Image: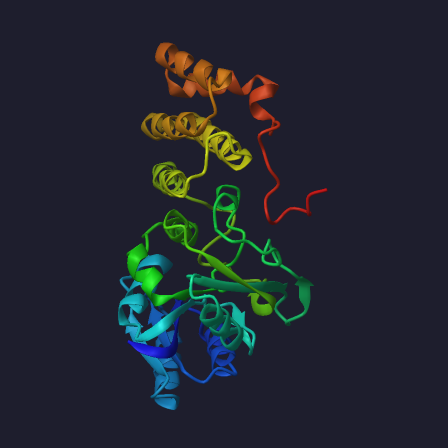
Length: 332
């Protein structure tokens, strides 16, 4: 391990021009000790040639690897295993870092040896680099831990934090979930009660562009993968000591309850049952609507129970247990 080095891991698929911008943003860092690992995850265009050119141009900085072609999580895991730095930075190929990021966040981790992750303010920018929102999500808020807010939303971006390598080694490998694998990854950090160090300055840019993002969008996880995702989030929160009485846990319970009904309406009774179990474990006390759902399912099956229950406005509405997420307007 190189104790001064920041390793930047960039998974990429079919994004040659955006990748060059991302790499240039890393090379523009005022912090000198960096290595960049580019993991091609099955590109079918000129991206592999661009990666090879970057490796030739910067042989002491850029290293290339091939991913297993199973999405950004396993591709990042390839980079994590190759990393030689004491600090790890994950960066999507369509986003950028600001020049002072590593200097500020490495300094914060050195000044706070009890902290495992340093984070700062991320911006939302358009394709031309115009700032649309700053801070983006909740990256302008000073927090000591990831939970309980992680039960409501992933309140930062993949490029926002800088991790100690030692924490990532304890967290273990990345998930192969197609979407929200980064959220599940941070749930592991939260389960370990990783301490956060806040840097009150802009450190990265989340780019809004015409192309599809590989790690998000309108399409989300299939119902069976939702079981894995919500189970990881709930397990992490409980290990972190989040009580069932917490407002964030009640928000989470209603969220998973809605996911269970959606799975039932889609005909996946096994996923509906598993999601119901997670929602019930997260619920505080006797939840009347959850109990009614289970009784109806025992009599009429999960799909009919979900359709019948959806007729009641009290079940469909967000309710008092629902919190505003980070992409919404600030809370009053």
